[in-house]
Amino acid sequence: MPDTPSAPLLLGNQPGSFPHSVLAERHPAIIQQVREAFPYEPGQHRALDELLANCTGGEIEPLPADAHDRDHWETWGLGEYTGRSWFDVPWLWSESWFYRRLLQAVGYFGPGPWQGVDPFRPFKVAELDSAETDEELAALDGLAGRPAAEQAQALLHGSLWGNRADLGFRLSAEGARAADAAPGLVADDSDRLWSLLDKADGGTLYLVADNAGRELVPDLLLIAHLLHSGLIAQAVLHVKPYPYYVSDATTADVVDALRRLTGAQGAAAAYGRHLWSALGDGRLTLRAHPFSSAPLPYAEMPGDLRADFAAATLTIVKGDLNYRRLVGDRLWEPTTPFAEVATCFPGPVAALRTLKSDVITGLDAHTEAALVAAEEQRWRTSGTHALIQVRDVP
Ligand SMILES: O=P(O)(O)OC[C@@]1(O)O[C@H](CO)[C@@H](O)[C@@H]1O
Figure (cartoon, rainbow, N blue to C red):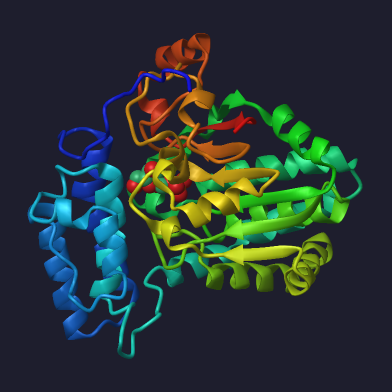
């Protein structure tokens, strides 16, 4: 085992830092957006008021004795953190706790009439129904005549940059779009990604999804293309067991995305039908493991999930949060080798992520210097840069 240096864990208790702004500003904004999107009843408004007060100035409270997931949260550190400020526990932990508590406040876990009603659904649906999605789907027809490898690379990039379609991020970073002029890959291991799949010749691709809508659609298109071209024989798609980080994909979002594809025209509809039948005949499988919305890094994944990922030819891990969970939610030196900090993962893994938090590894010194010279530290959180990083040996 290489002697990997460690780095400070990210907490939310430094005013002016990105994690602090998420806890102090983004979470209240999300509560407001959700409140405005639904005709909630008085009990839900009261619970949202309480959550707002608690998440900004209160202490972490225990779950009700009969909460269905109390045992999970006890295992994940709730006992240890109860009574502490949300700002003083690991940032990764307090963010997940926020979504767990928000769902509780709106009655998502029931019992009752609001059980299972996704508080983020209106935002996800609006995005899926948008003109931008129409344009992206129509563009597939132009790709259809190109060589398979070129199509695959274009769809990989679609999946990568689709990660900018993050509704929670946009709530507090509307200005980020203005920096469109200088997007760029800060690390690109895509050749290694393709060579892993090529070598397996009909292997199994796992994809750990991130956001629904305009990220999930290109993720699904990538999977459809790789299945159709025969580069992979099977795919496994990990989604969240419940609504999370505003736009994270659940099974319901996969169904919505597939219906959107099959209801489109041309190549998009063909891909949609292909995925529909792949689900029916077992070539595409869905998973919604409880640990997918756990407040912990992948280093702490349970044995059953570890065994599942170990079966993959390659696992593509999408998005910023999954990256934080993969390498550890720490302020690494940007040149820390990715392969050293992703050792927790039980098989070949590729991270596809746009940069939306301070966590970064695997940069070469020249790239880091160029980013700092151009943008000071803004490149870390602006969502205008992206990476493809691969660790190919377990
Ligand atoms: O995982 P995703 O959807 O790419 O990004 C999630 C995100 O918006 O949320 C976190 C802050 O709340 C950051 O890690 C990141 O900016």
